[in-house]
Length: 145
Image (cartoon, rainbow, N blue to C red; front, side, top):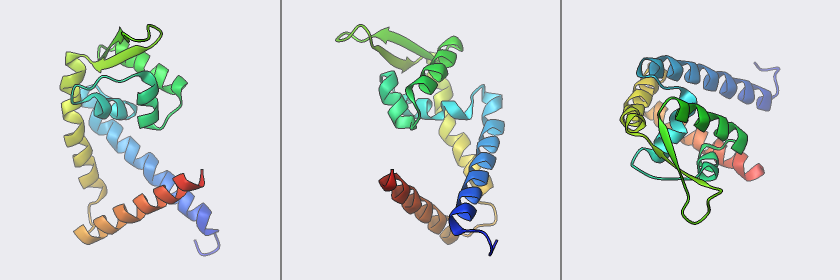
């Protein structure tokens, strides 16, 4: 790795780690009938909140078309419900269905279990340092964009 440029090394390591963690999350979520891509929606609506597609896309950090596709699938699977916004009939208010709400309550424990597996072999201090450094890097990158 000494001959690689640091940005390429950091980029490839974080990309690989992200893909591996997503695969682990998919394995953990599958028995509960959920997908990793649904997590931001479950978290954003998990306490009974009602939000628009635009807000959900912003919270998830994805483009509107991707969120539209995700929400269409979640609606098809009975996980969300839509109702017209009383102030703007062109906009839908989105909430979790009773089934979606039940599933949303499983997300945090599943994520915590996956994190425990990912941090196997780390000391608590190493875990805290890595999280802090990744948060700082993420913040730095956001400020560049």
